Image (cartoon, rainbow, N blue to C red; front, side, top):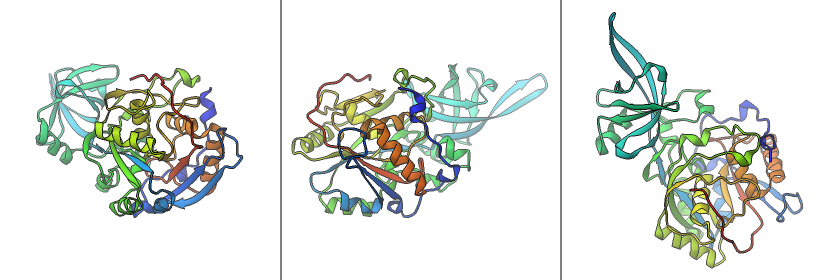
Length: 370
């Protein structure tokens, strides 16, 4: 299985730099499989909108939502160093990556060469960071504030960490603080949004509930590694970055009950899917808390997932491999070609798809790296 198998050409004009309003006005490509193979027999593509979800789902269906909250992880500051010629000040950019034990944070720092261990980066009048360690192209930082004080200072000083393909086209601004956050975000810790969930507002959630759709909340703190490119031609040798997640006892019981009743479990976003497949590695979803680096590519046998709502993904990305595993590589190639020809908007602020594979038989145990 080659990396080039997951490549496609996307016109730059289809990369969305702002979301549509209202959120459920985004377009929704419904992809329904006609059989187990990736062939076109019985396949159906429908051009709808996210607001049409209540007409597609109903009693017995359960949406699994990732309630992670994106932190304003992008910061700008200065480092001052005393030299023989006087004070030398350097501008420093910081992007927080993930929390570390003891309240420290792993971070990308640019330019890293202008820092030394033990130095302080001043990020605002209230917030500063000490460089505790530098290794493997990253810095480990400790902050002068913790708890609620840190959260408040970070909210004042930081900006939302827009994906590289948006940041290359425009700078983040105050509107992104709302746009790049889901309406059900609860648990802070992500440095990238679970973007399929950005299409929901409270009114749509209420309409879905009125139709009998059930919801379960899980948490996967999306890391910046989600944007890392695959660098190996043999995709089966790629190593995923680990992300911290939790499936509570209650969420596990809800998902298992839906499956036992013959209902559909449909995660919203690849993050929620990866987490429930990790927790459901034995065929039954169990409470889970910890890091997961599960890598899903064609040939993977899904244990829990009956469908997926997700945005359109980058060429050669692990997320494109995941949806190809769910629906078949050829089918997803046809779906993406259709989306491009119809002018769908791509990536984090873009439109969505609802992927409905043929129903599978009973699950069996699998091994998951975690």
